Image 1 (cartoon, protein in one colour):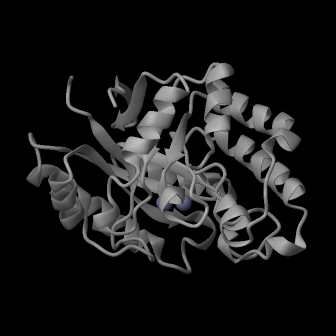
Image 2 (cartoon, rainbow, N blue to C red; image 1 turned 60 degrees about the horizontal axis):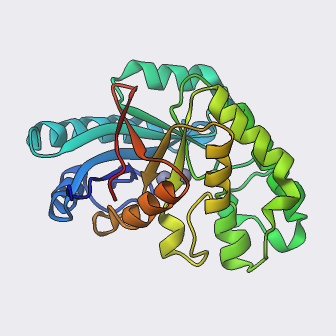
Length: 272
Ligand SMILES: [Zn+2]
Ligand SMILES: [Zn+2]
C-alpha cells in the first residue's frame, strides 16, 4: 500500500501572537514527522489589524515562510498561507492583504462574532442560549462563505471548544439543522473548502471541528473539497490528528484531500 500522505493545511508560527516556533523550525519538525506538505497560516485579525500590528506580523510570516520554501524545495512542500479573522469587518483591507502577496492558501475564520467585543474563547456560554448563538454564528459564516478573498472555511464549529469543552454543555446539532444546511450549501455554492480542524482532538472537546455528522452532511449536499489542519501553535503539534482527520474524511466519502498552490485548488488521494 502506498505510504500515507499527510498534509497539514493550518499551522501557526511565532508570527502569530499565540505561536511558538519559527517557520523554518516547524518545517524541520514536519519533515521528521513524515509530512508531505505544511501551510504556515499565521493570524491576521482584520478588526484589530492596526492596533495589534498585524501588518508587521504577516510581513515576517510571509518572508520567513518563503525562506523555508526555498530551503525545503524538492524535499517537502511549504505553502505560504494566512488565517484571516473577521474578513468581512473590512473587505477592502482583506482584498488588499490577500492580493498584495503571492499567498498559496487563505483561511477564513470568525474568532470574534458580531455583537461581542471579545474573542470566542472569552464568552460566558453559561449565560447564553447556545442554540441561538450557534445559529447566529453559522449565519455569519454563511456570509463569510461568499467572500471571494478566502479559500478555506476554518473550524466552523469553533465555539464548541468552549461550549462542549470548557462548559460541558451537550449540543444537539439536529436542533439547528436548517442553519447548518444553509451554511454548508453556501460553502458548496461558493466553491470553498471545508476544513477538518483536528485541534479539538487534543483539547477538552475531544472531537474535530466540525463534527463527523456535519462533514457527512456536507458530502450528502454535494460538498467536494475538504482539507485537514492541526491548527498547531508549536512545531511539535504539527501533523497532530491529521491521520484521524483523514480517516473521518474517508468515512464520510472523501477519497481526495485538497490543498492550494498560488490559490489554485489541487487534490491528492486520501490514501489513509
Ligand atoms: Zn482560528
Ligand atoms: Zn488557527
